[in-house]
Image (cartoon, rainbow, N blue to C red):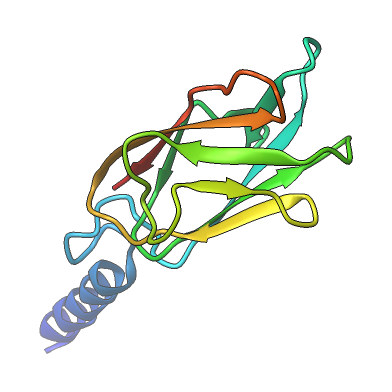
Length: 132
């Protein structure tokens, strides 16, 4: 009797972990409803430099339904975020900053979305948003 109770409790514990983990139900590594902040600042060459979670913002993985915001740090300049071949959100593919930020809600098919970030008159960078 004690062994069957232990097995039942272990089974319930495993089921709970599978049910509530972010990797269950086919979600892969997605954390739905996440918030992603990409920091935009003037680089040493005056062009926009990007950081994400203290590191490179070259490839940022997001999920459908996530919010992505580009936030200006260390300056008071306006900047543009421009998606080249379609954006992972509805509406205009080019967004200008407002109060030092550009905020979008991801609503797209899985795939890679190339974009540029630049201050007025500068060449854009070419990072990628990857919707998982």
